[in-house]
Amino acid sequence: MGLSIAGAGWAKAGHAAVCSYWAHWDQLIIGHHTHRYKIDLNWGALDAHFYPVNDCHEMVQDSKGRIVLLTNDTRNNVIIYDKSGRLLEVWGQGFPGAHGLTLHVENGEDFLYIADNNRHEVIKTTIRGQIVQVFPYPADSGKYESPEQYIPTETAIAPNGDVYVADGYGLQYILHYNAKGELLHVFGGRGEGEAHFDNAHGICLDTRQAGEPSLLITARQQNKLKRFSLSGELQEVIPIPGAFICRPVIHGQQVYCATLRSGSMSQADSGFITILDGADKVISVPGGNEPVYENGLLQPLYQAISVFKHPHDVCVDEDENLYVAQWNSGKTYPIKLIKV
Image 1 (cartoon, rainbow, N blue to C red):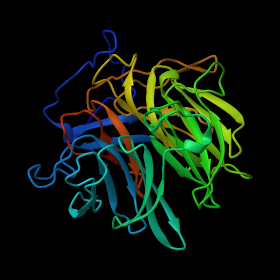
Image 2: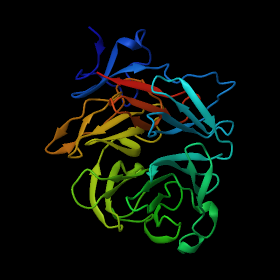
Image 3: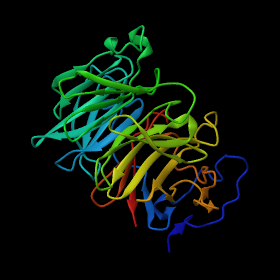
Image 4: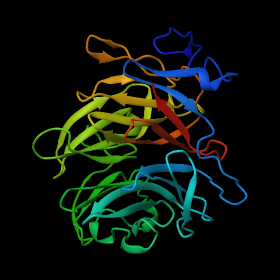
């Protein structure tokens, strides 16, 4: 029988991990209820002299089933694997602040949207790396005095091709463009009240409910997900106490969130994965404590075992396996979680 922490009552001292080393990782099972996983620490490991990574920021799966990794090492910003972790292709030397990665299929062709912190812009490329469009610093928005104030972290693409950009490291606005790159609307920003943000780090399109899609947006410093209409009206706030989540990733009816840190943002190496169901309730926390609701309120989440340091994104394949990219984690390659 494999060793499991699913459902176990692990004692904790503060928010430090209860365990920092396991001799048999391949026997360990993490997660809870319907979403439990074995761990492959060696997935995607390459020769760092030839295929280096710095921060592994985000990952997506393309239409061919390949796993696409974005790193801010300009010797190879994009590394493409098959699902077994075998290297297929590398490209990209012009994205020093490569941070956000969104895949969108247009007329049967895959395109990538790269949010670059250092360039202060979003770059649209083909899946082979050819630049086809740039969304520059939004000087015409009336919100910014200089490009340095604008530090985009993520994008979401609507069914009609409209592009939503989250300025998660800048002034916290959500910028709404049409497919031509014309700015249509700006909402959010810093301020009081739930319609504003503190670290609007991630954004995605949510099409799970019948009717018009919505935007699910991270408020990382507030430990919340916030739902907005496509026209920018606040619809719902989803508290996830203790969890500093990067971006929501929707697969089927579930929402998967890489949780950078837990407890407080000063608690290094304290991350895990947070999984919500179709009703936006947390059902599994691989690497973290079992989720508990009391009187309808989720109790604080925290790291229960140090599988991860700083998870920054999670990619979900068709078998519901997870691929976890990490920021500031020793320049390590992604970790694969195999669903059991």
